[in-house]
Length: 154
Image (tube, rainbow, N blue to C red; front, top):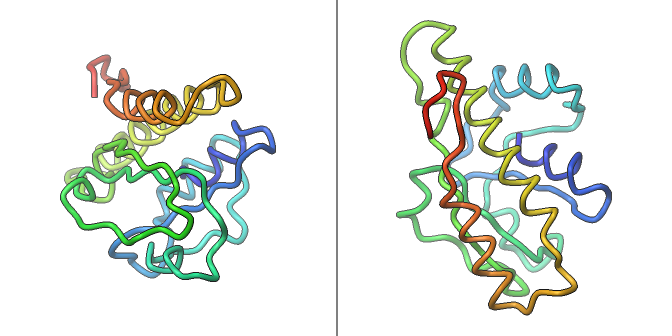
């Protein structure tokens, strides 16, 4: 979801790539549903390992954001080019239990959190911030709570 949200809100200034430490082999159908409901393209999406982006032949990245709550405790690969990194913890919607509605709510909440944070990120005045300030701002974005459908802060 973040991959397409970065591309939408980045207005051509950013390319998004999504990957995980333990890819499942297919993009979750509810993630596809969220993207389709938002009018975002789903063609070409695939489940990817973050190891793919740690290779010398990987696309150059300026920023890497880990978003899964579990990823905060994992050892991340060494990213080529030493991009700026920050953790933007989002509860893993695939871990949601309960009814289909409960699972759909978890995906909507994750989508909303990602979208809010990405909008804030792409609106930063990149040309006016030095690296340390930019790093601090991207980390602050990851600590922000976002209001969920139920009206509580996530």
